[in-house]
Image (cartoon, rainbow, N blue to C red; front, side, top):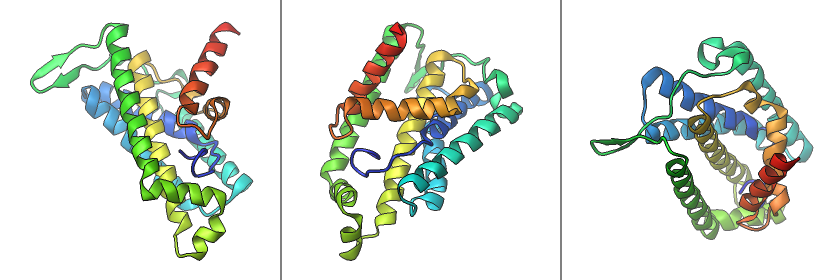
Length: 231
């Protein structure tokens, strides 16, 4: 969405990934939240962080925008190292179990890999469907126009900075959701999630599969993980 449609290359996505993961881990450990509230909490915090950063950066272009997002990611990384009460410091956040899936008055444990994969697949389908609907809406068409010629879009009365901000916020929410799923799966949140390597990996996944195709990031993520396992 951000790179393929809006043309925004961000090296700060690791910050939103880490924020979502830490938020989920802390919510499970401190408050005992079930799965769905945990994922919503992580996604919302990722989106709020993206709005905050976006208000400061979306008017910047090209390398200046990249550097500012990278600076925020490094800020989150050092906060993760030092804010021991929340993040666990250099050792990471641990000591929480995988939350249950609450459906009405029924709480289903997610103990098997198959159950977890089914939940992740359902969320992937929901996010992908949301993206497709969004890209066919006027907002999505405006994003594509902004990528091709932002000056012309601005000249006909559109607030380009607002489109960039909303795109950045949606990207932050989705990245926060991914981070929350990471915490749920591994029951551990290492500080490396906020590092520059994680930002580079996220950008590389998007580019590897082809940023112009809706399935590109999914394909890129699969190829990247496969290569990581065999190299």
